[in-house]
Image (cartoon, rainbow, N blue to C red; front, side, top):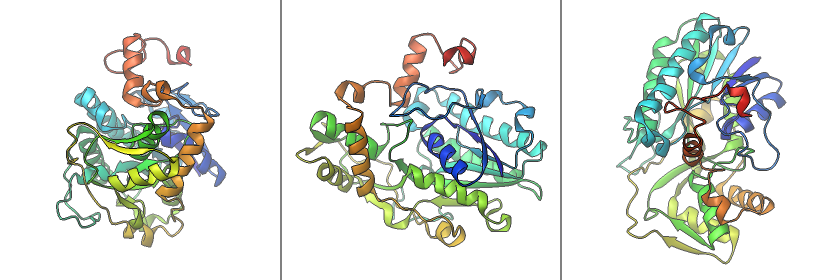
Amino acid sequence: MRVLLTGSGGYVGAVAHAVLTSTGHDVVGLDTGLYEGCDLGVPPRPPDVRVDIRDVQEEDLDGFDAVVHLAALSNDPIGELDEALTYAVNHEATVRLAELARSRGVERFVFASSCSMYGASGSGLPVDESAPLAPLTAYAESKVRSERSLAEMSSDAFSPVSLRFATAYGVSPRLRLDIVLNNLVGWALTTGAVRLQSDGTAWRPLIHVEDMAGAIAAALAAPRDRIHGQAFNAGASDANYIVRDLALMVAEAVGEVEVEFAEGAGADPRSYRVDFSKIAETLETFRPTWSAERGARQLVDAYRADAMDEATFSGDRFVRLSRLKTLLDEGRLDAELRWRAPVAAQA
């Protein structure tokens, strides 16, 4: 299958490109290059098409059997930077891309959505795909809007599927430190303490970045009639964790560190447990292989191999919002997060 992978230079895309290629797909990566140079270890493959997702042209979709759409402004803090930009990139550009894909005869569109759209599940019971959506942030709301728009576009010739990913973790050539487990390991190794910004009582479902790529591969391989126009929680039902327990897990993986709570830390309103039985029953080739315990040890080894110190941890190399602010302060990006100079000159 010939696959266009948007966001190929991001945290998930860098891993997904390698996994999809290894499973026999002809993968073409598309990325604007905002995080080039922000590498852990060997840099990922450069994008084949270097363009802002908002500027994709119809001819960019020629000859593809499927689109895997990962490109987005990827977390809540970036959404707070400018909500209008989050909706422009995450929703409006998604709809435009899907329209172009449909007009060019692309049959399958795999959309990277998020379990964050469940907001706070007050019952404490795991929520499945039929649960009411209660997004608490612009990022989560942008995913809700995108899913709804894609569902309306589905047809006999165009088959979208939305993967509502749990919170990512794990090693990638384009590491992120602004996600919970990766962040906790970084705190522990560079400061000698596992530092929580909340009281640690919130629930989080987690998924390793390699298992995310596996879910994408399974969605591409699945028979159309099993996934057409549907949304799937993507993760494992035994991988719902209380944040405090994750902190203790990290402390054990690092060794000789303490668990600390930030001054005035209160409950995080984003707390939800997720039921992943639908994806387990429908996508038979998707079987997550990672646990948070194993992932924490992997992160510890990778950070030590990179000689990560406190300056690196607190810098802009692995934190998406900090990286964008640096590019803005340097005048390399304009207020709409577009390159001021030709993209090729930024590499």
